[in-house]
Length: 346
Image (cartoon, rainbow, N blue to C red; front, side, top):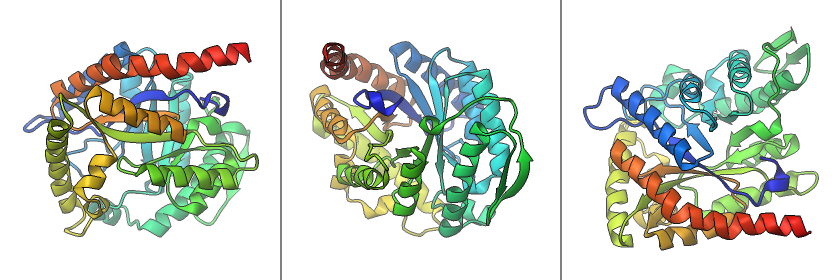
């Protein structure tokens, strides 16, 4: 996943861990395990696990534990956090967990970090707010990177302090394995200085993604583009109107639940119109979605994580099968085989 291969867009799936109606958590986890196994069989390269707390519609309070289970249930796929809310955790504990995962499953673990979600219930429980979360993230992530790449490290920061820590088990997770989920310039600058990747939220516009990449390049000492992970909702149908109707029903249901988590306050999704939400998703026929993939590729997206816009497990599986067979095969043949041929002749 180096910048030398930035023209290659890696395909994966986003795991929000949303159960079906009246489905038990045990059944939900079993079904998501089956989903990642199918995704691997289809040729998907990676999967990303969210972190949400006290949320019956997103059973992902412990993304690293879920990653461990999914890694054990597959053979080749990479798994990443999208993202660990690092301000809620002790960074040393997160470092040890990642080191253990990376040792058990070499070259299959990546880690995304975020300051913390905007949900009032979890922020209150963890005594967190946005500025505190950002401060902790911007201090913790560089310290984590140092733990993985230096022996006997000490850290004396405002939020965290430790002395002569030799992280075990010995493994290496470098900048290419770390991502920051952020649109804030201070955090983007930090990512550029450390050569970390970036992550976008699901409904970011292409303009926002483009601006984020531009900011990163401005702060990078060699004007490099980042490894850019973008999540996108997906729904394939016979026509665009059918896809929009089904996707909009699902989004409205998610909105209603998030409204409760925001303690009746307006969340970020409520600021977006139906038209904006639909524009920032992969909806319609295979041809419609192919065109949107072209735009993402042109922007410099290196990692695309698909989120089928349905709460039904059978439909999630069907959607990723159709995407890989009817869209991705042709897309990779057009772009990445051509890129490979060009590199061989240059």
